Image (tube, rainbow, N blue to C red):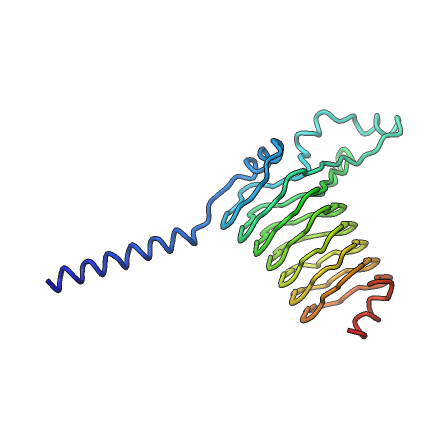
Length: 240
């Protein structure tokens, strides 16, 4: 009787362990599947997922074959910037991106610059970017949440514009973090953000609440010409 009871207890414990493992296991998703969903105008929402392949919000590879050659667009007075508007909500929570995440790319061969704007809410919460995360020139027209995420390699938000509150609280940047010329129109939070190297906020403009409590920058903070509600960045830090 005791042996049967022990066996039942052991079996139950094993099942619980297996169930717990399934809860924490990450689903593997191909970046191409996400891009196809975006092309169909569908909302994208993943939790506990590993994203494999380059996630290209600009759809550069599809657009290049149909674009005029460099010589032609230059002669006709055209623009070498090709923009993609992401019309769907985008949400990633506790996800791992194994390859590049691209909302900006400059193709040196053709001299075209590809960018992506986000027309609705964007969330990358508690995510890990193992490769480059490029959001240069991106306009975020809804809420933008990057809270708790880790950027292992190169990342840039240079010239990015945030129409609503931007949340970078508890983020970690392992390489230089570039927010040069970035505009935050409705506040931003870098509460408890950790920068393993430098933070470049030169020419950055912030309007609204700006939370830098417990922010830690190991190397330099570059804030030349940066403003927070019309005050210099250094003045803001002294007053807060």
